[in-house]
Image 1 (cartoon, rainbow, N blue to C red):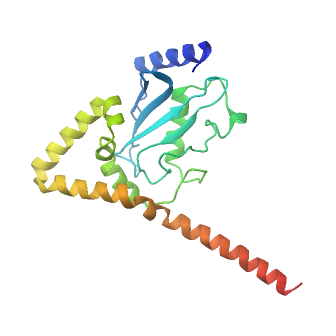
Image 2: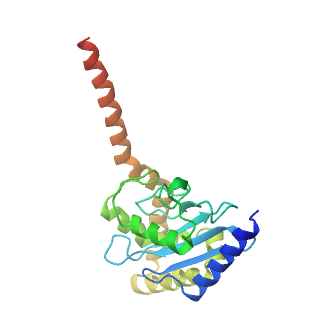
Length: 222
């Protein structure tokens, strides 16, 4: 349960965001109704990047000591940059309390996440994927999100947008487009992890092989 300082701070930040929401790119944010320590966000993909057109849902989980301690940062939408449902190692996350600045806010954290998302630097919780994979995730991100009842309850305006997009898709491409969307979503839900982590797995396997080989060579010369 949040202490008074934490509650006051997060309540003040919520009012500030509602008054002046992030718009470049646009970000939707809301805490859970019964738990102000858990905030959910949706980031619209940045223009001129593989994420353009995507809607990336995630959450911030604040400690009761906030703003003296940083939150956990997670992404919940497949995106090709970060593992879904895993804490991300960022300078403004709970992985680095030593670098946390109590003056930072929800807006600061999300802005930093957006900046890191469009980069390619690896970190704990990041993954490797091709540009085409990222674009595919962006294309079906909103369809993926609305499958989750929690998302639908938190962001009804985005559910309405997805419904409008689907109606236009069907009108333009025919009823079969809805079936194709479901097929692509099932691929994302059931198989994207294996595809995304294939490169990472190969790199890990190669590193392990090289380590064993170096030990073997060293022993040959002892």
